[in-house]
Image (cartoon, rainbow over all chains, first blue to last red; front, side, top):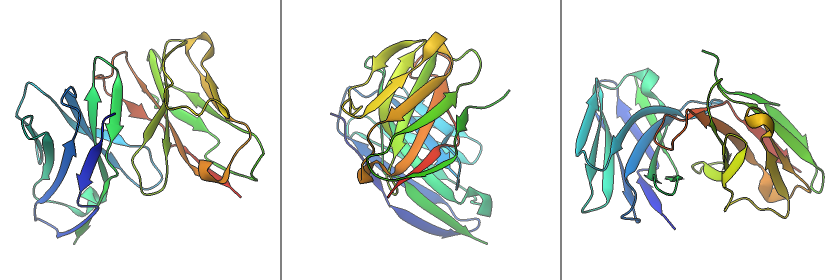
Length: 112
Length: 114
């Protein structure tokens, strides 16, 4: 089955700095890669996603890059703010099988 | 638009007892998911429904877990009997139809098995 590794497990940055979270996946058939933000006591919320026919996608301060050959994808957050502090999860999805596998999460702390 | 509703929010039981969780998805969403999230880990899919039919239950421990989605709307997840390792947050999510449609998660039910 699919295996998703996410790094780092914890990340602390100063407000205004950039944060990068990386994920690798094992199943070359995975073709859809969402990223979720989970705040304390809440369910995960989709923040950005990318499909395998695209190498990069950007939405304001958030961007995701995908390297299909190396089977890894990354989340980039620029100009971080304290409200960006949360746990971030990546996921790799085989759309033809309807299966998503999540990474174990990265706890991001943005210090004011 | 109302979000995904789950109840109860918290539940504490002793091992070997039974417990049930309820989920009300977003109106009009055909697909419903139940995930188990153990502390420090990402969500793990237990079961996926499309309307009232099961699409995937390959990771559902069927000797103790059961789930149903009557009339293709609300869903219940049951554990009987519970084990210590079942302590986790149980998340319900729904999406319009396909796996690539945005999944909207409920707040989860935190289960503690003593």
